[in-house]
Length: 145
Image (cartoon, rainbow, N blue to C red; front, side):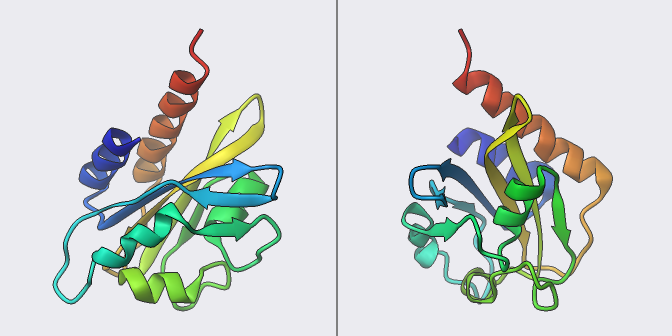
């Protein structure tokens, strides 16, 4: 998972990649780590929180949950203004713009990947496709026979 996150981080020139997996028994998306690029003024030590964070599948203020439930990528150009964004996580990580892409298998969401950037920007359709390709590769690797 770390290799995938590092590849996405580099390809999108972003600051943060956080993969999530669903825990259907508890109805949560669980963070399974994070990969971050050091940024002036942003302490990346708190990123350990992503090994513990669990976001309820009914949470309306999470782009990860929204992408998971809607089964499509969600782009937040400015997380400070986006009603889907978790403001405390954005502040903690210095994220201004983000994208969340679900990890899918047989039209069912398994989790997702959130990419954050400290710059205010709009992720392009090509960048969405890059993250989608990596989520497809993850799904294939997990269910390889």
